[in-house]
Length: 289
Image (tube, rainbow, N blue to C red; front, side, top):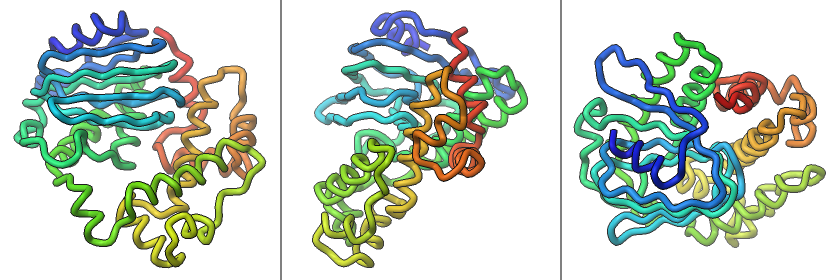
C-alpha cells in the first residue's frame, strides 16, 4: 500500500511493522510509530486507517479538502480515516501511535461511501476493544487471538463507515451543545489529573450546562453515546493506559495512581473495557521489536 510508504516518508521508520495474515487474501498492515512532532502528507489514501494513540498530550490537526479536525489526544483514543481522500495531519508533542492500514476492498461499499457530516467516523467502545486486542495479540505473538481480533476490527470499521454521521442533527434533537460537553469533560479531566480528587458529582456536571441533573444525563448520553459515569470510567482507564507505558510501575502502582479502589477491581474493570488485562497491555507496549 502506497499510504504505508508515504507515512514512513513523513514520520520515519516505524518501531515495528507487521503484515497481517488474511484467510480471504486482502492485505492489512499493523505498525507503531514514536516521534516528537510530525507532519503527515497523504496524496491519496489507498487504505482505511485506524489510528490508536498509546500516549497522552499531543495535539492533532487533520485536514481533508475544505474540512479540518483539531483535538487533544489521550491514550486509548481511536480515529478512523477513510480511503480515497488527500489529507494532511500535523502532530504536536510526543506521539506514540499504532496504525492499522486496511485495504478498502475488504470492507465493501462502506469504505467508498461519500463523506458527509463529521470528518472522521465516530469511535466506539467496540472499535477501541478490537484495535487494542489486535495490538496486544500481535505484540505477544498470539496468532489465534490476532486473527480473531482482526476479524472483529474489520467488522467494526465496516459498521462505523456505513453509519450515518450527523452531529448537528443529533444536537437538534435534544443533545448538549459542544460547549456544554466541553465544560463537563474539562471538569472530569481535571479530577482525573489529580489522583486524590473525587470525580465530579452529577449535580456539579449538570451545573456546567445550567440544566437539571436528569436532563443532563439524558442529553449527555444522547450526545456522547455514554453516561457521565461511563465517561469517568473511560477516562480512568485511559489514565491507566498512559501509566502502563512505564515498565517500572507494577499493576498495583498503576491501580493506585489511576484512582481505582483495589488492584483486583482495576484488573477486572480494565479487562471489561478493553478486552485485555493490564499486565498483557503493559507487556505489549514494552515490546519494541
